[in-house]
Every structure is written in structure tokens, then in C-alpha cells.
Image (cartoon, rainbow, N blue to C red; front, side, top):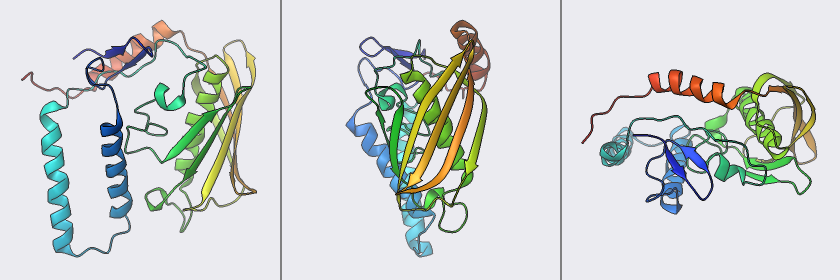
Length: 236
């Protein structure tokens, strides 16, 4: 199935026939439910019998979705739009996507003068050191948020280097506040910074150098290498 296109928002994704079935509250409800189960799985005290019953329910849900889940297709934007809500821009992102159960419950806001702020409370599914958020998760959050900050500055770019400075442990089950902004654009290089706080305490800082890529080359690479990894499904 070819990637679907929404004329209203200009979004190109691999979700399916968006003109008839756009992502909506039902899909978000499903993603939230899977996210909730993921959190429960890593901290459950359920008995073996109850675990078997829960597994059967999840397997039944998977069986319901199998017949209507087409093969993967590249999910790319035609061009960045600085005034578009990040959750609409990246609806299936594993970091900020409302419709991806992999994504933490992260809420992003674009500033009136540019830049990005976000708030999140991360639970047990994202634990690294006891009681703390995994450092790799923090790096992934910064990678996405700094990229969105670049988009708010009117430039889409790929991560070249990303440096994280972990200033203090990042606690679980505590509201975290992120901020990111683009500092400088020098030719193809985009320099971006971000911070993460738990209350007044600075937990981490990030510095990124992003590289502007020719969209045609990027799309060609995605189609060539991404499509090769797409699961093959027979037409029904």
C-alpha cells in the first residue's frame, strides 16, 4: 500500500488510508491502553494464572488487528511547517507520538517566539538506575525535542552529533520540564540546545549539531533502505 497523504495537513505517513480513517480518538485510546499495560507489565505482582489471562486478552487484540495492518511504508514529511503542532507533525513518533504506545506521555508546546517546551512524567517502564529515568531514554527525548525546536525555527535537519550532560539523577513519577531552542544556523549546520528540570533542579542539558539534508536525497534513501525492511503481507 502506498503512503497516504492528508491534503489538509500535508502529512505523509504509513498509517493507512487517512482520507477515510484519519488518526483519531479511538486510535489514541488504543495507544494509551497499550502504554498503560506496558507500565503494568514491568511492575506487576499478578499470579501466573492472571498473567496468562491477561496475555490471552492482549493476544486477542493482536489477532483483531492483524487482518487490517498493512505492510510498513516510509513515514516522512514533505517539508517542515513551523506553525504545526508537534503531535500532529509526528503522530507516530516513538518519542512524542500520541498514537505510538512506545512514546512517553510527553506534551509539547511551541513558544510564541520559537523554541519548544515539554512536560512529562515517566513511570517504571522508563527506569534505568533504581528510581531514575534511563539515560538512553533521556538522550532520545532530547534528540526529538531539539529536532522539533529546529522545525519551529523553520529548518528541518538530521542529527549529526548529540551531547548530553547529566547533571543530576532524573526521578521517576515526577513532572519533568524540557526546553529547547535553535541557537545558530551556519550553512548546513544547525546548532541547538536544551535543558531538562525536575522542579527547580537541573537534571540534564543537551547540545546538538544537526545537518540539513537535501529532501530529495533523504526521500530516495528512505524509499530504498526503509522499504527493504518493510514486512511483506499478502493482499486480501
